[in-house]
Length: 202
Image (tube, rainbow, N blue to C red; front, side, top):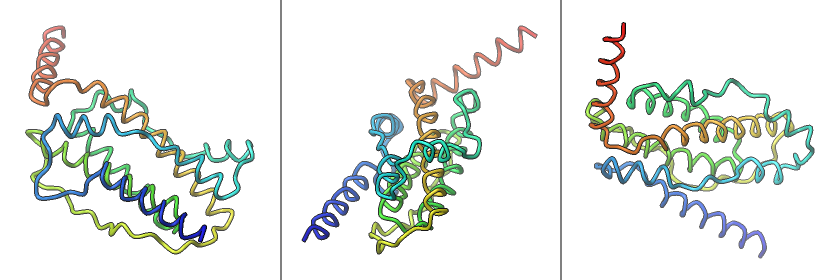
């Protein structure tokens, strides 16, 4: 009975995540609406949930989870054009989703769905830019729950490192997007004006 209640609550959470991050359809919301949606999406504490479920509570293991590949900083990303920035974000999200899906764990699968939804919205932002792509790839996720499996210790470490990397990267992305408070056309004009000033200074 408890297991059924837990499964039901997990399914409900997945449905809410899909509502927050709608799958790509034939058309996207406008730039302002999509940007607002990405900015206002609450951040879920995936790492703590995963570590608690997998029995990785020891503080020394948390330090091990932080031993990940280099995470791009705000300085790395803020000077990119809007198109280059969004493409960079999308390219970084894809391997994270694949790693999480490979673990076949309830928490990582829920997280993968959430990230795929974020990627959909990133693609919608791209579509709304003057030089962005004409269409986005369709999501392959069916929104189904996997059968619960036991993870090896190495898989648990891989999971916590992947989650820590993503959450750090997500915070960086959010900080960059928080500076996007104008329409893409205005931002492009401002960028061109700044470039002209720098050329004249030389």
